[in-house]
Length: 166
Image 1 (cartoon, helix red, strand yellow):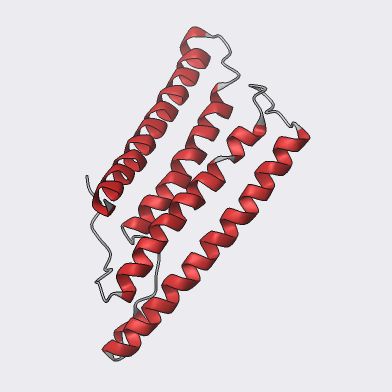
Image 2 (cartoon, one colour):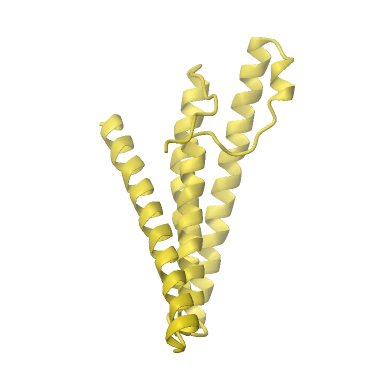
């Protein structure tokens, strides 16, 4: 069950990131073509591309947690005995989890506040809470991934940085 969940979540994260980034590139390309060659305005391009990039980035944060590819300092743990290094890894994972939970909580509050105020975007006039929803989605996925990594570390698993799939 857990492996199937991970398999589905892995693919959903990656597919959405690829689709969002690709669509962002197409929107930017279309905006450039409209401006330079067709001499017609495309006022929504910059704003739409920005929101697509934000969603892709926050989903990408979760992928980074899963692949343990975020910045870290291994100099300290490389000089520690194995048991102490393991304890430092556990503490680091728990601190990361606490931060993701805090970020998630405050991003939900921010999104709710924007929803209640009824703020809309400047060019497209869409509700801004839709744009800010990227934060709780990304941090929620990161919490799931950080819990998985924390369990792996506690069980003594190796969490070395993995190579990025191409």
